[in-house]
Length: 375
Image (cartoon, rainbow, N blue to C red; front, side):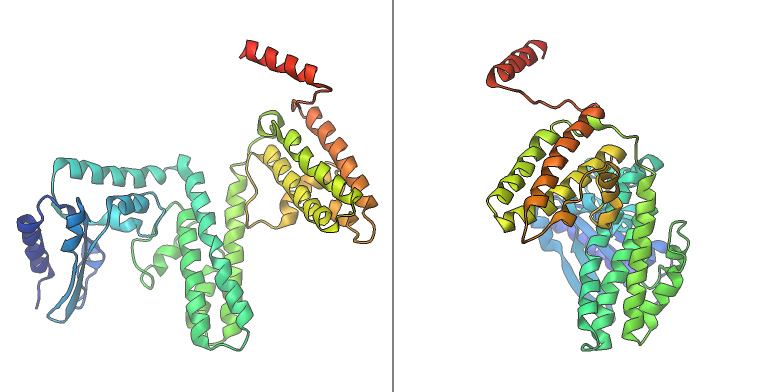
């Protein structure tokens, strides 16, 4: 029976002779590193090149019917893995080193492991929470494809898209728990189910997605798994909200948004329907987003429903411009925007926001002179 470590030794000797200055690290990971290898297991190993010539050492081969892939990971990619920006963090965190070119290379590699440990500390929970949320973004494209497919596509198509959903959502859950998978998909189920933060019906969703032969059941499980995971993420984000603070968070906001409000008023007067309708929807959403930020210290998630962050806008008593849209009569919209401009300025001033409004150029010049003298 082939000893895979004899193969590794042969490669390491080859590197020492032919690529001594071109390879920084050689290491292995996977089943042999975890002590769970079978007789058919290959040795998962990689190397970090120290020069462009080092990449030439990459080779794929089969010995005694066992496949091997000696593949390169750049220092830059290794750093992304260590920063949880790629889903193969375990390769850096848990690999066993076979060869190190120098003490400097060892120190650099160990710093990557320090990065992993640091990001798993409680004080860095928000950083991985943001990465967890980002993982969900691509899920919605696969959900859309499955919804659009209806019954016109085969179970194979659904399984292909569902696998993308499954992979992304589970990676999102790992990040939500400030963790990473130490095993590949199919072997990591127990690991996933032990996470403290997970959907209550996670195991049911996983089994349905992987085993069901009904396309509608697969789609529903994917949708619910995604929705439940998003709910967990948004719930965790609420823990990081801070007290309202308008003066620092909305400094300069009114001066900027007033230009958009004036644009709508002008469009209404000129009966420029498209411009008026477009910017009315845009500016209401923009104000709602900034008010939410002022109240919570966080920007609303792109995955939030509109009503979630629109509440602060409505509670402030601002006019609902969307309700005033009328393609046959723009006067109500114009008057609504005028009210909004006045109410928004008063609201921000009441919250302590300083607004740079000047009656004439002389007043502005005096302001600039005073600001220069102070600062």
